[in-house]
Image (cartoon, rainbow, N blue to C red; front, side, top):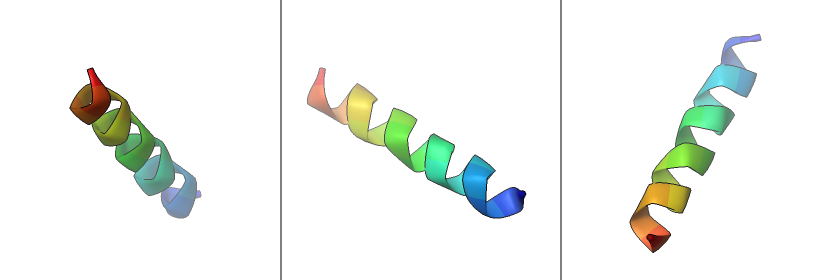
Amino acid sequence: MQLMSKFKAQLICVLVDVQ
């Protein structure tokens, strides 16, 4: 389940980048 955690972290990074 580490892949999911990495994916979530990437999604958050993208969201923060957009703002």
